[in-house]
Image 1 (cartoon, helix red, strand yellow):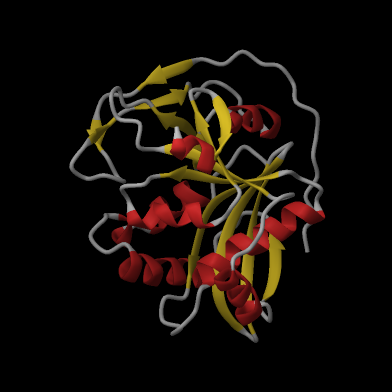
Image 2 (image 1 turned 60 degrees about the horizontal axis):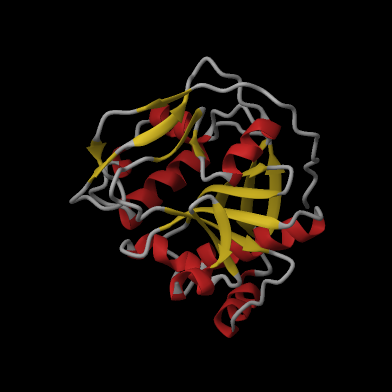
Length: 247
């Protein structure tokens, strides 16, 4: 099921740039700014793994982290898979969808994936702009990568239910993006997918599942706090979620 491999990190020199302010995609009433790796720098899996440990993410070949002055709403989050304890609701989700079959591929375009992506965006993210993504935008966002990336299909019989893009890092997996069938009633595909990725980390003997940014003020990103024990990056240090919240 999980066939990815680790390699040794190599030291490289990177250059960084800061973008101009732009409308925030997570908190629309605010402006955002990003620190980005210069495009001429070569980012392979090992280099990217180090960057993720310091709060970077990627969108296609674009590697960035928030750099928004007084706003610190976007907090990098990861699950410690060795100590993760599923909740009762998560165990129900695992049982409900455990019959799905997964197929792992290299990144590639498939019309069936794109149609599902469009349906998902239209229902789950209407009005965000992503619901109007062209084929080119879709490919640039999800199918361009300089790191060890995989595309995972999840089928129910012969019906495609979900697609997930995952990067393998030296110490964990990074959950890039997942989209699923929005029309299946009483489904919890998103929860099941994170649980599946946690199990994949365990099979590969990797310690962490990187979930991107936890944003308390954005309900669509707040769900990540349900996967405990969660660790969040505060002032350059990974801390237990509960301890950091109490502080």
